[in-house]
Every structure is written in structure tokens, then in C-alpha cells.
Length: 404
Image (cartoon, rainbow, N blue to C red; front, side, top):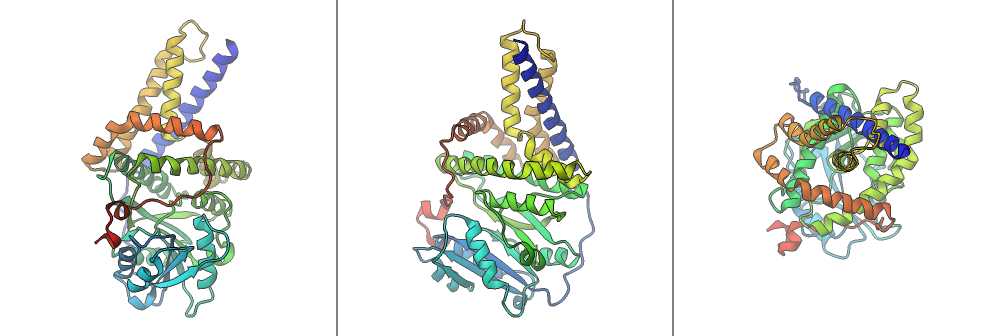
């Protein structure tokens, strides 16, 4: 009995630590107006690298948006890596005006393989590129995206993360939740970190890297969640990821819970690999008063927002079911902690100035939490597939090639 009470007490301490951490970020994420950066220096050249596997349905508009930027066309080169494609991705990419690099050999099944190969092809190019932008095959860049990225590169920022937005929030209950989740991530994972001078999170899309970063590191990842792993690797090298909210990219979220389940299982398995490999080095760096490493350690070690909600309700339910046990903290205290966790998404959306539709998506919250618990249980039991599965695009399910 005493051991169980102590274990629950430790869990509740962790939940309070996570609560304090996330509320601090939400408050710090309230955007402070900043002066606009001066236009990038003339001659700064960017390559937009788009890894694509059987993406004929969406690659045309993606290339068109990347080429329709408010910067000189001779300073932008859009390159698609058609990775082990069996459809017309390469043809559609070339028709839209991209340079298409077709990869048919080597390992397959991860975006990292296509990116590393693509970088190897582009680094020797002449004239050389000053930076590399990485976007997904369905990402639609706003016209000022590349100009904003070039300006920050010109100011010496080596790694940049743009603002990723969900393009289809009204397609289903799940896409509404994905939009809500992305808004909160943009606030607490990136805007708050920028305001605090810490390193943001690489989101897998709308990323930009100075040439020197790619020359030095390539894409050195081993896990399924390669973007998160690379961001942690850079942080351990003292390289900060700078959030650029004015560089906006719109990408699709999967509309089906079945497809989302496969993706989430992959994410859980990948994050398990990342934690095993990165917690030790982050702890070592944090003990040397490296604040950037300490922040990354807290983010990696503390439970996520949704998991914290689930664990909080579990802790409260346990104390209510067994009121005579010698609990470390009073039940009223646990009620307050759980209430603050349940209010967190609302407060974060207010801080992010989210539209009313994002608040409506909270009605799916109980379903989402139950789904996360089920997926997490499957992953912990080792029944999750760790293989990459491509996202089914809206245009495919509607039978409309190239979004026409």
C-alpha cells in the first residue's frame, strides 16, 4: 500500500512539473511584435528540396507554389526527389517546372534516405546554394516564405523552422484536432522558444538549413522520427533552431483515424528510439548549465500534454476510488492539478489567437485522449509497426489528380 502511494505521489510530482513547464511556455509564447528583417542580401540562392514517394496527386501544386515566390526566380531552384516512385510523380514535377532527381536504388521507406541522397546531388551544384529548404510533397508555401527564410539566413541563423499550418482542418474530426495540436505546438514548441532564446522544434516541413549545416552533418538520423532526432542532434552541438512565424507553409493532415493510428504508432516507436539515444547526452549537457540542452531534456523527458491529462485523470480516479490510502497529496490538490491540465488547451488556443473552429475541435478531446491511450498501449506492448507509411492525400481519396 505504501509503495503504491509513493509511486502515485511521484507521478503527481511529475505532472506538476510538466504543468508548470507547459504553462510557462504558453505564457512566453504570447507573441511580442518584432521589427521586420531587412530583405536578404542579393545573390542569396536557395534550393527547395521536396522528397516524394508516389505523390503525383499533389506534387504539381506544391512545385507551383514553391516557384511562385516574391523573390528573383534565378535565386530559387525547386528540386523534387522522386524516391522509388511507381507513378507519374517525376513527370508531374517536371511539368510544373521542377528539377526532378529520380532515386531507384538504395534503402527505401524513410524520408531521411531521400533527403540524404538529394543533398549529395545538390551540394556539388554550381552555382552553389546558400541554403536548403525542405518541405513535404503536399506543402503549399505562401509567396513570402523564401524571402523570409533568406532574410534570417542573412542574419546568421543556421537552422530555421517556418510556421506549419494544417490546410484541411474541416475535412474531419481528426483534421480539426490536428489543426488544434499544430497551433499549440507552434505556440509552445516554437514561438515560446524563440521568445526565450531557446531552440525550437523541427516539424518535418517548412525547414531551412544553411549550406554549412548540411555540409557538416548531412542528415545523420537513425530513428523513424528523423526530424525530431536531427533537431536534438543540432541542439547538442549548440546549434539553435530559430522559429520564423512569417514563413508559412500549409500541409494536409490525414482525415481518417485509421491512417492516423498507423502514423501515431510509428511516432511512438520512433520517439522511444530517440529517448534512449538522446536523454543521456542531454542530461550530461544540462548538468553543465546548458539551458538549451536543459529545455530539450525537459521536453523529451516530461509527459506530453495529452499524456499528462490522461495520467492526471488516472491519478485522480485512483485517489477517489481508494480514499483511505495514505496518499502523499490531498485529493483536492490533485483535483486542482487535473483541472489546470484540462484547461490548458483552451488557454493555449487563446494565447495563440486561434479561430473559433479550433475551440470547437476541443469537443473531440475525450475521443482523442481515449485514442491516444489505446495507441500508446499498443506501442508499449510492442505491436506497433515501425515502418514508414505515406500519408493518403485528400486528392487521392477524392480521385482528383493534382487537385483539379
